[in-house]
Image (cartoon, rainbow, N blue to C red):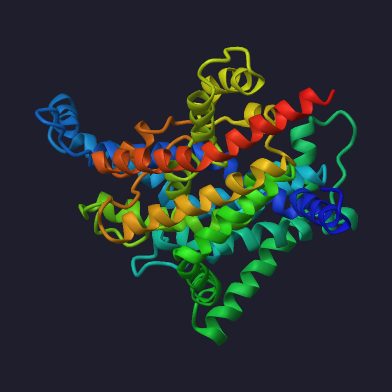
Length: 429
């Protein structure tokens, strides 16, 4: 594993993972994820199907009054998914500015203000929720990166108002940002006026048509999902955090896809009939069970193969890793077995998730299993997650069980090979 090409790959991937702007995008999405999850769960509760005589929306409406609970869920949606682009604009700008050790709050506020300036107006002079939400994500990302860099340049150019010593820090920072903020917002206003006059289309519509919509269409395909799964696990195999490295690239693509499903599900469309197959919960709930590599299946395979030797090293690692693995935390097994740079485990760790991506895609595309209509905390255990992300369908549980069983069967030969290799190493000592 010390081949020069491998070393070069690790170095390049490590640099990409640490690239300042990609890290800011990743951290920006991570920061708003609690709001996304809350909005998703609110809509899921609003539309949760009856389970026998148990009708959750009916019970809640009985407590709060008919239709009142749906208003609560709708309000939560308006404060989360409906303004997703605005939240991301602020969050990414804030994180990028903090990485430069400049005023993150001012940068975030300036970007949020500029974003609102660019949002198309409705006929009654309101702001279009269509572009405040997920459809505006790419504009939010570009705007946050460009305006934060401009803000940093203006600060370094000394185009600021210096306050005397003794002035509170908050007041001093606000005056320091005053001139840069004025310049930036004037430039954004001029840009908006020129776009309206010459292009007769908003920057949101232009970016969406040219970049975002084609990427979302590509991301919702099986080949793209297989590539994402493959790259994620290839990076993890070399000890790099694949989820973090590719997260900044796939989040802007997959988040709008689940948002579209959620929006339609909120309006009464069945989970079978929503359009998008490949989403973030598609991967989290049906492929990354137990964490990257579907390692909960690896732990089950170890317990199945090693039933007699209670103190076997593999079994000891599996026992220590199992509690965390149930909540999709798998660093103990990745670094404890280890899987990282272990040639025996390379093939199953990388290819099993790709295979499960195919089985999951087929199940959802053919209508055997409903599509995903909810985002859950990534620590939600399998079985529960399969039920919830499909809108409360037992078919989601069945697909998870099928995928887990298939993964266990595929892992078993490699567990056996790993045990034999470990035994040979111990005998030669």
